[in-house]
Length: 286
Length: 315
Image (tube, rainbow over all chains, first blue to last red; front, side, top):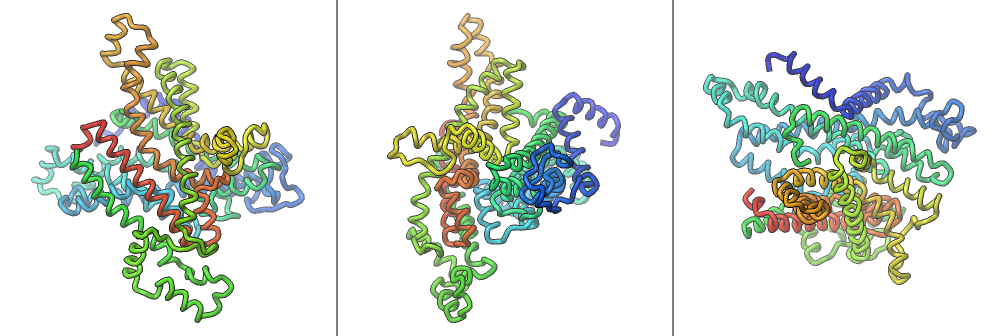
């Protein structure tokens, strides 16, 4: 762990051999920059209407991807929408990974009935039909970006808890932990020096696949009208709005869907690459 | 074996309690009082509100309410629709078969796409066939299903006019009509599963094709096709079938979206319509029955898996 440089360079060399993963990473870097600087990059405001220029087809002057039923520029709406989708993905995975890590640590370190309780909870969560319950809960709580984030986060933690607990269990057997313990290392030190660094790899790989999953779920909720609400240009909601003009302007559906697909695909490529590079063993059977 | 099944059954109890409690909470803790939603314009009358609250038992402590709710559930009483006044159990019962037909059809579509493409990919590894199949697979998992559904509607419904895009045909109009209505929704719902299973079939086939007994079969001078079909495929299919079973529950979730897009009168469309109309008992009933189906399917798959694969039982 100490000698960071050779480890890092061999990581990059190995990672760079996976061309799809590199493409995914580059794509995500571009998208994140676009999302951060959306105000500067987008040619128009995402909410600016121009009824005189509604349904302009893609490629019209000044509107690369066309305009919608209110004459709003679709490219600008998709660019601003990337902020929402990406932040939902990150926040959901952030919530899930933190909750899961804490519960996994508790289960692994305390053991006994705490472990039993947390692991049963994990099993119960795995047996729950999520999209359906999330739909029910969102229907009652009311649609908002905040609700989307925490509800999706609240249902996605179990996999992280399992991973971290497994790392703790594995470390318990290891001699260096035994040595550290008898050397008087505190639990906190054990957690920060040994457990968390060792959990990092599986958690990062899982999180990389968790983000696109969250983006798809949030888009599905947006599409059903249970997520982020118009006129906010969330991608799923954009497809849903476009569906009312499916005969007149099918491109209103095409573009935002394509944006979702490219984003999700980039994360999946990146995840595959990370998994193969960081831990080839995880690749088995997948 | 029996211990495993027993353990699995016991685990169902907290799951069912959890599900029923959440479903119950949808009404009991609904913000923006459910009663005023139900009464609509008459909500201005406080006396009426009180009377309805008492009728629904909403004035009692919530634990009491939950026990009452469970009591009614066990008798098959899911309440009455705020909008139509009809028993929710009847409404759900009418819609459930359509949802099940849709999910089973999607599973068949997924297998019909995944198996041949996965096998071809594995057998013709690292050829253009393999790469195209893998690209289709990655595109399939990355595509939001609502988007795919709309693209299919645009292409096959509106442009080519080959297939109907709304509702479900009447089985009395003949099987052909019925299947024609089912095709686009089933493809929409089955695609992401097809993508997952395709990748799995390929990897599983590759593993098996590397085994000694396959090499032995080759050495014996057996022809290639029978080796692939008789020896490799049979073993490679075990993980594929297992995953297909596990993913069946996920199809139920996707059905909500697909039914909405194709106006297919199933449980999902019922739930979404109820959500739009704030018809809480119907939301509760449909979410509950959906959840029960999911739990039941997962349970059956787990038990079947334990029967097939003895190692699981001791895990």
